[in-house]
Amino acid sequence: MRLPDRLHRTGSTLLAACAVLLIGAAVAFPASHESTANAASTVVAVREVKVGGFPENANGQVLQLLRTTVPPGVVLPVHIHPGMQVAWIESGVLTYTVVSGGSAPITRHGMEGSPEPAEMLGPGETTELHPGDTVTEPEGVVHYGQNLGEEMVVIWSAVLFDPDLPAAVVVTPIASPLASPTGG
Image 1 (cartoon, rainbow, N blue to C red):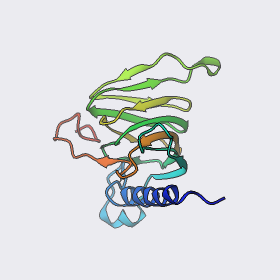
Image 2 (image 1 turned 180 degrees about the vertical axis):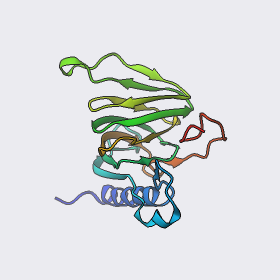
Image 3 (image 1 turned 30 degrees about the vertical axis):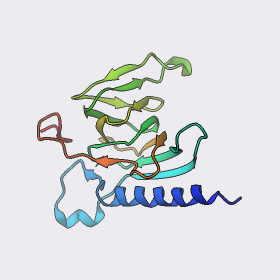
C-alpha cells in the first residue's frame, strides 16, 4: 500500500530530522564522563517513527506513534517538544526531570493494571518512571531523561506536532543546579 505523497514526504522528512537530531545535537551524553578516546563508542538513544497520519481536525498537525530506546548510561539532552507528547514506559527505569516551563503529569502503573491517579512533576523535580508508568509532556515543558540503570529503557509515545518543526528542540538552560543534567 502506497502512502499519500504528503504523508510519505513528511514521514521521510521527520524520520531524517529525528535521526539528525539524535545523532547530532541530541547525541546522548554517557552518565559516566569517559575520555575523548572512547568517544567513538558513545551510544545514543534511537527514536523510531512507527506510524503517522494527519487527523482531519488537527489543523495540519501530524499524529505519530514512536518507539524510543535509551541504552544504559545515556543522558538525553535538555529539550522541549513543539506539541504534546504522551509516553508509556515498556521496560527499564527512566530517571525523568522537569527543568522549567510547567509541570508534567505522571501516572503510575497501578495494582492489577489500573493506573493510579496522576501526580504532577514540577520544575526542579525528578522521578523514576518504571514499566507501565506514563508521562504527559505539554508543549514547552523543558525536561530531560536519563537511563541510570543497566537495562535498556524502551518508551512508546504518541505525539501531535507541527510537521514542519523538529520533534525536539535542545535547550541550553541558564546554569544552575536545577538546569544541569548532572545536578551540579
